[in-house]
Image (cartoon, helix red, strand yellow):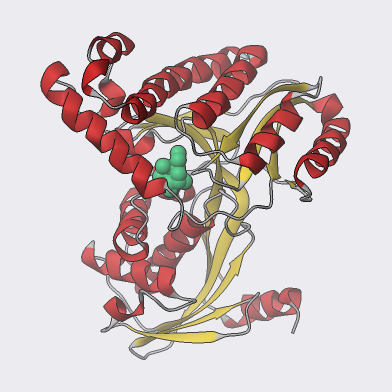
Length: 381
Ligand code: GLA
């Protein structure tokens, strides 16, 4: 059966259809796990779970795009860490259980439109939608923040990426037409209308897939923890995002060159998030664009998480006259860029970027047509 046929059939045969979003981070990269504010938006690209109770003690998984079936024993959820498919679901259910959510045997059909390894949080979408689907069939209240935290625990404790909370929070709590100004220290969230005036956000995949498990993600996080451990006794900060630029300069001699560079990125990126939300609210797209460019430069030079392909893609974008700014989005080491582009120049911009990127790297980049969507949505079928 084709995917379309499978989805049509699922609409008839399952009890609920539960989706959670992928996300694009507009700005605020690698600061969530430092207690900083981030500025992401949920995308219409999402993971959808069709779910129905099956009266057993198993969760039977199927996918619209994979020819395989996996059964998870609800009493042995710890055992599935290293399976090829289904480990994200097993980890999410286990962490949901630890958070006090009831589990029940069910059939789940997963359909993911977030491209894997693209830096658009396909894993968060899978984790959040799996837990929300379980809530739907057990009748547990759908507490989006609780689900996001359980999903984050799955990524950290089961999958092994020591991530922050941005992706899962956005996947669960996103709102169509809005970006989220999320304070990752307190989880306070302000919904800011995503009004880019005569400009559009364009997301392009460099097509070098990234795996955060294998990438230096955990290493970067450890470096920021070193910075905090060394600077906290000298400055009284509780998280790295509280560090001032002046204090960083004052105490820089206690840090190695690398750790200083990572901390400087965090301090500067937090300032850029504040400036970018002001720019968005006041409709200053030129300012917002300049902040995107500065963010990319910092992620390349100070945080060192971009790599050849993402740099080539961002530079190709930045060199087009309709582009006000462009940066990598997500964890880095591959995946996507987000660019702010004058809407009437978007078509020419895309052509230019794809050609220039191909000439520089030999890869065909891919442009995503999507919009800003909602977080968790549950439909009774
Ligand atoms: C990944 C992580 C997030 C965040 C970003 C970088 O997407 O899952 O928690 O740290 O990288 O901003």
